[in-house]
Length: 225
Image 1 (tube, rainbow, N blue to C red):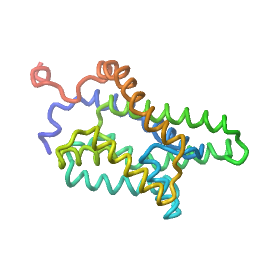
Image 2 (image 1 turned 60 degrees about the horizontal axis):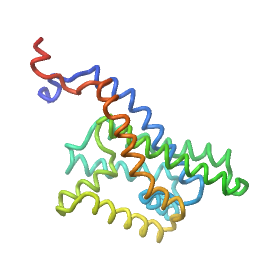
Image 3 (image 1 turned 45 degrees about the vertical axis):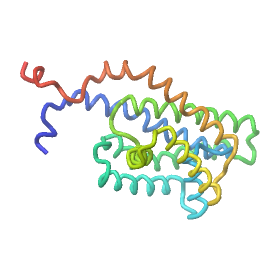
Image 4 (image 1 turned 180 degrees about the horizontal axis):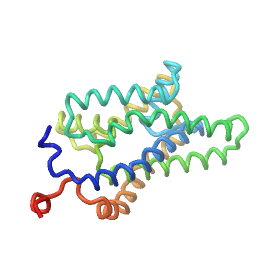
């Protein structure tokens, strides 16, 4: 334990923690937009939507349950992927999804909001979610609990990550749909838009963030100096 704390750059950790507030809010807001528009969601959110219908729990409660289970799995089989960001998002994402969704459906009820209005909410959700994911990755504070499934299966099955992601996304959609989740144009938007926006955001933010926060650990030579 003592060795872990040696040469930690606490200034970098503090800056990363402050920046973490951005994706902690953006990602659940994007997911809440997917749910609020009623036009379908990204693959994993369809799975959560199906659980929501099946168990009659809120989206936030379902998300918290899933995240805690996955965090437990990471503690056993994937501790190297854990970070402060992993723990924070595990326990905050569900709460913010419910908070933002309640705000959206109150302001823009499905029954009275025109389809173009719901389409705007969908577009905003797709962008904010993907941008949040890109910033989250750039901060390098651990991976999201759902990403652990993809990485674990990639290592276990010795299959390329992109093929594992495709198979998992298809599985999420099928299982979620049969549990009662909504599949629609939002699903297509989520599949096609998330990857490119995450990649663009990561390229745009990674170097500036890395320059701003600095390394998590100080090199021994620097520590001595």
